[in-house]
Length: 140
Image 1 (cartoon, one colour):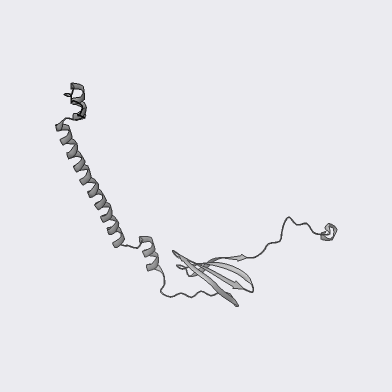
Image 2: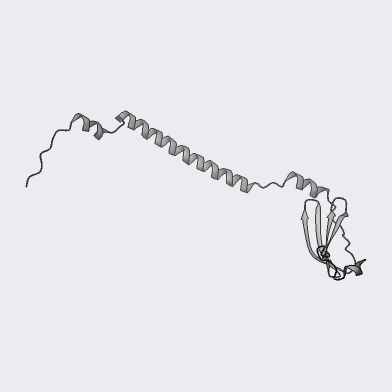
């Protein structure tokens, strides 16, 4: 069997084979792709470099540094007699103390700058306000 005869390309199919861009347009497109690839690589390198820089240079917050410098090197906090300290946490110049005294949990907020307790919160159970007494006449 013989191969079908080849026909010369018509002018309409010649434009399709060449593509929508002229050879000059293809060259410009290749240059643009290379330039954009270089910009992407430089951008990623810049982001990675900035992350490494920020991770390696740690500076304490100025407000925290000022608080630490103002505090006394040693302070004494007196808890009520018979209490047992459960937890202590610091936030800036405040110290939160959680302790138990006679089965009641109490929280005290201590000011480290002024060396004094600001407030004490007693955590306990409150009577149920919705509950009515069994004998209403007895409550009068």
